[in-house]
Amino acid sequence: MPLSLLAFCFRSLYRRYGSEFFVRVMLAHPVATARGIARYLRGETSPPRPWPGGAGSLVGLGFCLKPLAPACPSGRANHRCAVMDGTADAAGAPCGDCLILALGRQALAGGSAVYIMTSARDILHDVLLPALRHRRFRSAVLAMCRYSFEPMRLALEICGIEARLFPFFHGDCRDYTTWRRADLGEKSEQTLLDESSLRDLAADLAAATGSSSVGFVRVGNIYEPARVGS
Picture 1: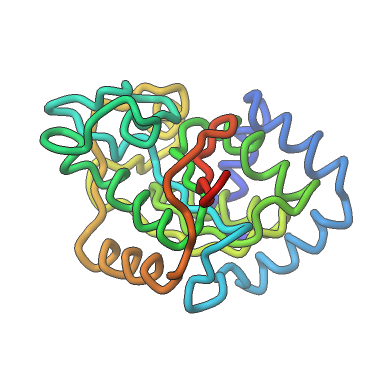
Picture 2: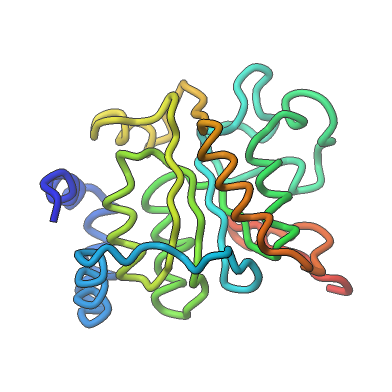
């Protein structure tokens, strides 16, 4: 197991997220934890290709992708998108150029839920625990800081989510101190995906087609596809 992951886990254990993950996931589900650690050590973290979309699939996008100038009308460190909520027009700046909205629409076309990721604790409660307890999510594509990759891969394996992770290349957190500030919502930079990652991510989402979704409905902190007649 990478030393960087062990150091991250040790420092996080004294934070609320780390202690809750240890108690509510690892201690409460020892068999899933052992199996997940074994899969992680074998490197089994990729979702089925092509991207399946549909029920049980999730597209997760870091809140730090939100535009800064002009600023996102929904605010910064939260799970909201005014256009997905139906309270803002997608035309013009900043929504017309927002990567979260563009990728969210692609996810909708494939029938996937969309989650604007903020803190590690929220991810635990909104994604990891529902997946572990109720098999709510089985596959995911996530855009996030490379610094978070190994802790996230381990958590996903334990909770039974096959995932592909796409790294930010600009404005991303590269050590625990900056990661911790971002986890508390203190993130002044806008992150970006490089052209190669963005192209691959868009191709994955485009592989799932034929959804009958007509829009989003927000369930808790997650945008679910609204079906025809729902």
